[in-house]
Image (cartoon, rainbow, N blue to C red; front, side):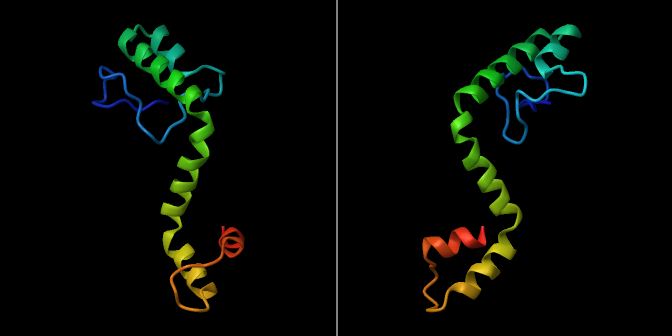
Length: 100
């Protein structure tokens, strides 16, 4: 669930790409699974990642937008270039929002 730096969770820093508060099909979070299996340091790292996720929830949209734009970069560039009538490299805000 939560990818940890170094692979063993010792650093306690969750990496971008996975939501730390997601639950599996049984309704359990990564922290609970780690604790149940006796991985105390990993459970502690998951707890820190959960706290960080909760405190930055209002910024999550920016990460999702960045991921989307990175994934669809070539398509977005083509669509925006078609709407750049004056060939300035910029488009009005309303055009940008329509493309998104």
